[in-house]
Length: 156
Image (cartoon, rainbow, N blue to C red; front, side):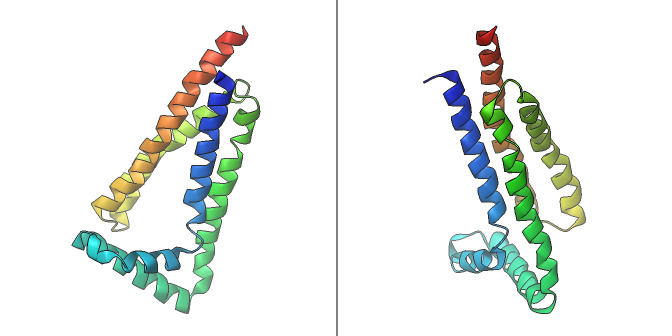
């Protein structure tokens, strides 16, 4: 398998994961309802947190459905961010800066989660989950960045 093919496969994975993590914001109330059907398999603190989130979301949806528009924009933003990786998919060397930007974004998840999480009364386990998105995003991005550097050396 060529280096370009490997880079494109990693980028396809990253694009797909970014889109998937975004579109889950559309049916959030339905997803939480489904998760709560299985809360017996969760730690009590997690089940209680999810129940509290569901209750707040259901109440908000019933009284102020326009606020859910923010979740629609969150999902849309993920789709748009994923589309930025079309550039590196087409020409990885020319568009490596997008990979560097994404690495920065994954690192920036940490301070946001660690600062805003406690301010918004987010439980520690949920902050850790949010931070894990940054960590798991870095893995394919670092691999891709390394392969792009190799590809550039091969072309010289």
